[in-house]
Image (tube, rainbow, N blue to C red; front, top):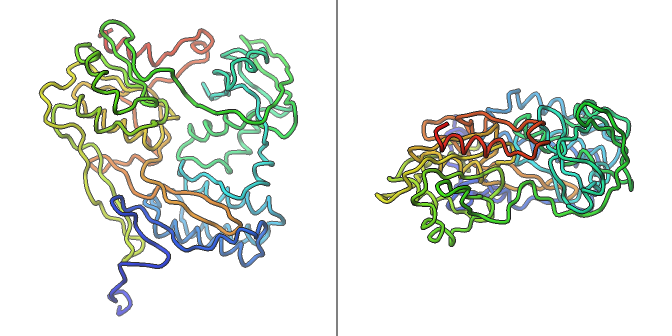
Length: 425
């Protein structure tokens, strides 16, 4: 009881809380960079360091859906028994995947793991559509078209191995908050290899074909992009791409969009700026709560408390009066989800799309022995009524996913739905 009631320090050598946000800062931990394959003692240090961070400073431990203490018991022999550097890195990757946080990526000194996954990739972009990896574009237009693959082609096997088997093998090493986002991440590296070619089988309009693809080193991956942040889809429907929108553009954009009957905000991307409050001031007539946060405690490890509610909008009688349709999917992550929550409080907003990445909140970095780095969502992000956003993601008002047929026809079915909603169809 004396220990329980003892006065605890508000400052800590190893743990701090970032000013103004409150997510944990894990300070002064030695990364033991030169230990590419640490001995058993340091491997256990890796496990216990990570386990304790999640136990006491992960705001979403309650969403792991299994007893975190049992995970520790399970992984002690795994970390003891790994035989080499690759086994060590895979054990870490499997461990961090168990917290189901899309922010929990692995990085740093993971050269062996990068080679294991493959350092070369084809120029073909894949997306899981109707639970199958489908060609949806190219990372390099010229090289992509040279392959002969077309949008809507379904990859069924890679190097003689059925895609279903590959996915099953990758799931436990794929860190993400929900299954659609796991598939998003698997799609990205499905055609990675260390070899100069990859043999694939694919289905085009019901006919099975074989092909050998060249692989290349180094593409500038962009999940979703646009050459403009604003356009008029028609004379009375405006479109904003939240990825490329800059706050400084808004006064000029407002003059073009203010009298339209509908606005489409495309958040199937990640913002390069932070226009959330600036755009909200044009959209929302009065200051409206859209989110609240929880943070941990240095004095009482494991305690999380709600700290404040944030509002979007302000006193603006000249706000946007038309309909607002917000487009989301599994690419919408973190800041994108946060923006969606704010824009959604517009009086005539409708969210269209599918499950988002389900990872919100400022990230906190973790250093592990061997120079390996990872992250967690460091603060809790909730709706004002306390409903979860982590793992659940942003739940659309109208669930709609692309179809393989629509991709083959070059259609953007979510955009079509947005236009229908604005036109009252």
